Image 1: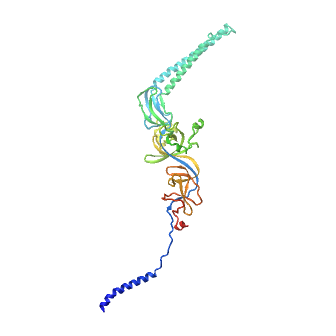
Image 2: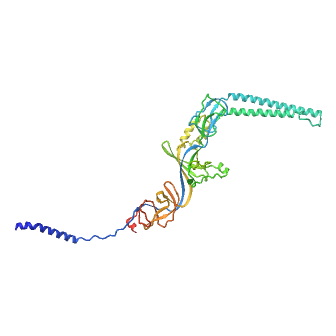
Length: 425
């Protein structure tokens, strides 16, 4: 009996477990069937309407002075004195004395000429007296008879007048030579190089320094013909009066420019204007060269024009104090800059990221129902990271800016930020 129980007990347990499993399985409810909805890929969109946009043209260029000359001596002699500012990097005001040549020889020569002028004035007066005596004598001896000019000493008077005029011209020449022993600055500027020192002998036409103006600076910007079309460059056919007398900083015909460059470890910005193009295209690159003008690039013109600095011999201390009041960094000659030129204004265009334009002229949009549409847009202009297009959009239609693969017209997409219920609707 015990042996039979041990043999049948495992079989009974297995049968009971199987029956219990079958019972529990038959009691479990069947899972609810849910239809799968394809919501499509997730996309970022741009809700931007057509409007007015200004074209921005990017370029690069280096700063150069608008005027640069050799400062030369107009007389010969020994350099007696030079200004402390007459060294590389020195600043000076218009009319400031930069060097003086020993004037003694010219002073002595001028004294001699002045004495000659006084003598010739005396001789002229003497001739006038002699002529008057001759006229009176002729009228007494030959009343009513016309006298010969030689008798009345008219040629002698004219010769004395000519001699006086010649001596007065030599006097003026001597005064000019004496004045030119003082070499003065022709404009507000800075010294690039100096090549003379006190005690040195110089001749006529000898360059004593290379100087440039700091009243204005120029940036020469090479630009392609395609980019030039977007800039309202002042026409070379404008009348000389309008070009030469109008201040570029106040003219609406000169496109404004923002200049960016790094100086002293920091990024700085300056404002300028496009004033003209150079006289020819580059023969190798076939590119035009725009000339951008910046007023007072060193922020020193106001200080140089002040009466206090103008009365000082060197003026360097006063200029340094005045310059410290300006927060803007100087636009140094030779600085390489990034140029942002504000060009023409376009109407009825949409500004898109460059990546939203596909296959050169296709734009993807999404309808309120979540369907993707492929449009052939009128691409007006593309730049480094932006594009301007003309595109007709239906109400609620938005431009897709995401990058997708396997795009087809009418495919379902989801707009980022919408819930699943909104996407299904």
